[in-house]
Length: 277
Length: 281
Image (cartoon, rainbow over all chains, first blue to last red; front, top):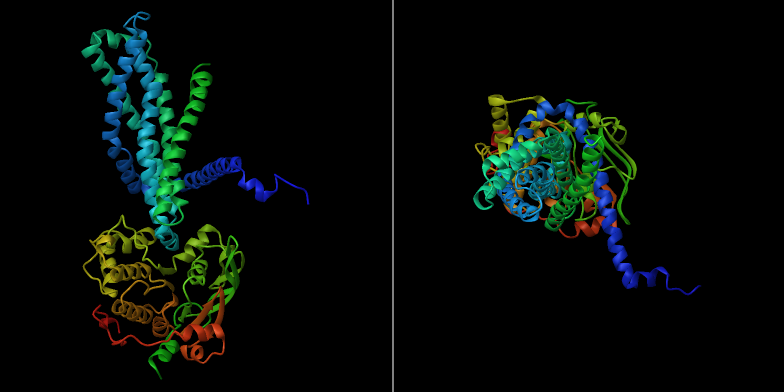
């Protein structure tokens, strides 16, 4: 037999093997999770035929995803707007007239900061919560019980959460946009010596409805990602408490990664190809 | 005639061919990774009969039960319920078939986001569209059948283990099923509560006259609730018969299991216990 440093037994002990093994496992897990989520998305789309019967569940989920996330969104948005104003003023100082501060804040908030930061903070809260809830239901056989009763868990659990998140993320983003611009407006007035009139004039000068629309399209997509990855991680949970904890972590990680990747894809698609044409 | 043989003789009226096979498991194989859990199971349960699948923990009893209701797909073999091969059914047909089943899970599997009443009422609301006062009345009736009237407003977290099992039982019989599956109904309960659950299972069998499979490792429960007992060991059915057949079997696995001893718990009777079931005798 040939000697070998590449024989399976020895290769497994090589220090690099553990690293590549871990990377491989993470990649396989991510692909598996996204694959399962795709199947879940398709089944949820099919379950939309019965959305009328599920409307109370959608409303309940909208309350949990939307209304209960509002305090977090308010805090994040106000301070995001305030920080944007301070940092934009610092970077534009001596180069650009102050009237453009309103433009910079409005554009950066509605196109990027509003949808992305809202999705990341709401995603952390909502996807972990969905994964933990469905994961607990999975390990305590509640989902099996639902199946055994002839009730489709996708229609009863997954579809209402996805629909609610698709609706509520754009709504939360509108709140976030208004509050962040308000935060920027307040700081500009209070500490940057910019009058309200000039701030608003700057905003109006380059206002484009498609910027707002682009941000809301992003928010819609992020809503789908957050709820879908939460449901996928929850439904694939195995084991006990450790499995539920792992599902919540996996949901947050995959949601955040996919939000950032899809943000780039949507930015290119919307602002370079569709609106930029 | 004994009470048990009397029960067997009168069971079976109603659905399908009286006394004919309702559930047939044919050469069922299932593995998880390298571990073979079911290794060629054959089992027939007749109309109105209560079959107990008895065996040590980890021998594949719950896996078998989940195959019977279509929650798991076999690697090989067939499960035929009322003449329909489960693996050949589409999603809608399987859903319709499942509506004729009731299942009590080992840990009760109550939906903890719902009240007791909502748990019991869910199948009625989803499948029959029952709502309002009619739903509340039906839920209360089912809860009364398991001796738990007046608890529909409570959450599962506020119930004891025995109460959870009884609520699970009320939920399982909500749609008046033709077939009821029990997964370790007495596991985790103290002997007195376990005895009450055993009595309850028998009372309900008489009341709703369903075909049942009870999965348990509890010899007393098996003897008390079953018309027939199938002893399962290492993924295979070693023997199907009565408790007497098991006691007199020459099969080593059967003898080893039975040798652990079977002693009826002190004070065990078939009379209605404190759960208040006398009205259903």
